[in-house]
Image (cartoon, rainbow, N blue to C red):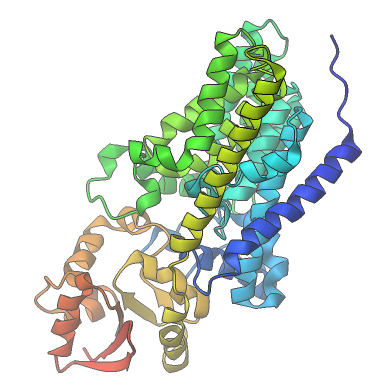
Length: 492
């Protein structure tokens, strides 16, 4: 039986309408808050701003104790190029507009794929998808590349299901320009090939070959090649090997393993991705064409046991899988039509209440990165230091807010603490000793070992000992202070 070709005009309308709806939903959160949802988005917005105003560059000189000093590849280059045209809005508004536009892009692409696969009614799925869990909604409102990667994942899966090797290669190639984590496209292609072989469909090996070819070309035919290869190993290596992570720096909660406490926060996704497909299996209504989505969902679910951030892919795949099964009437015949209509209405109401709760949770606790806290100190440093002077700061998360307002200076490290660990583990140990207040002569260590005469400390308990040490040292003078930040200037 042949499959009717998709109505491209109808899909284009679906994409346009859902893009507007998702943009409004994300804006309802992003524009309500003066704070940002995280600090990493400040880095991404600034990179797009620099690309627009200062042009393309192959180096990243702003971190001196980092692998990026010698090995740099902008592994989010496509994302930065996509948001660069928003730079004339100004950094703060650009940050918010990028979150709205790219978040809506990722969600609309997923919904368009769902519409192509027969999901109805689309108004319901347009709300159920972003609101299927507070952790997923939070990831979609960040000024980061995840929604763009989600859109490319959807295109990749669609090409695999359609058995279109060239489209597979193109999606893999583009995804590698958006995020080097696109390596997870490779096992998905292997799953697709295995399923195609098991079902007796031709071209199984070609799918894998074209997918791998697209990924390799994405790394090789890249503005940052050949540095893309060594940066890939240095960036992802510590996360792939526990043995190398002996120093175990704090890498943020998104890389922590998921626990059962996460389940109640994504129960709509669990219901759609597990309960509905299991019901389809039990009733022998599981379509073999859904096998790739099911295996992909299993892969991302297992991945959350390593890092909970993979919920950003597991949740939408779960919604897609459940919507497919429901579109084929998986529960038809279990009860009288009138009873099923009432049950469907009840389920939709439950999803609506859960969605409202998830929106409220993100609104109440998702926007805590007060970017203005760093603005005064960053601008003070920009106007009182020589170009390129190094600022010693007390943590990796402080880089992005400082860089957001001030690319005049150089900093120690940021974005990922393993960038410092991989660059020089001994110096990282020395750095942690100084920051903890355990170095007998921090002024000599900072000026000599780290080449800096400016020290920026954020008001938090772990910085207090170093602040007291510098405050009692005649070679250190307070140059700036406010409620959150303290800046010392040192005399060797």
